Amino acid sequence: MISKKRVILITDGDESAKAAVRLAAEELDCSVVNESGGNPTRLSGEEIIKVILSAKKEPVLVMFDDCGHAEAGPGEIALKRVVESTEIEVLGAVAVASQSFSHEWTKVDVSINRNGDLTEYGVDKDGIDGLEIGRIRGDTVYSLDELSLPIVVGVGDLGKMGGHDVIERGAPITKQAIELILERSGHIE
Image (cartoon, rainbow, N blue to C red; front, side, top):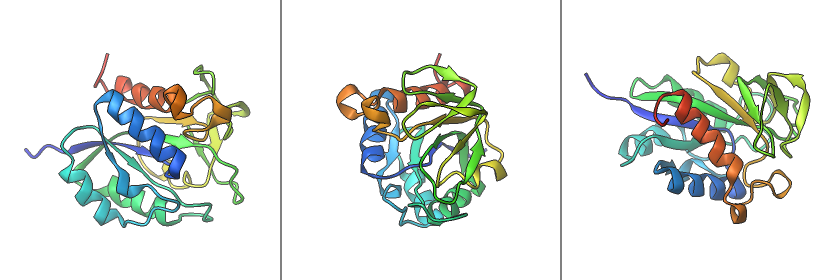
């Protein structure tokens, strides 16, 4: 039996998100696909899969970004291809809130607000609890509901959240969201 590469999907890829994800990857001993970051994601799903398969450590943190593209943009098209790969095992997704002009939303199993509290409510890009239970708005979250993912964790804008997730503070919310997925998947206690 061929072992699959374990990945965590992250629906953000701008410079702040890349810095926060890289820091979390270092602290949690994960790999990160830097090439999938960007605003928007420029690599195809096939190109991202090749990078994932060459990663030395697992799980592999993979960023996807649509740069505000309505409906399924380049990041989501690549994300769906990665999830469909028979060589990949998805442990979960970090769904990042944004001020989406197309008002895309997705269901989340749990959110983490800017103070690090778990909440059943969605959060906005600043990491502030919203009014809707179990959903967030963002621009690279459209296709998550169409996929069978073990867990989706909603968070505010990675590396920002009104200063609560900046790398100078250790990107604590980014790290906490990834740790939560690792815990729920049985990879850390």
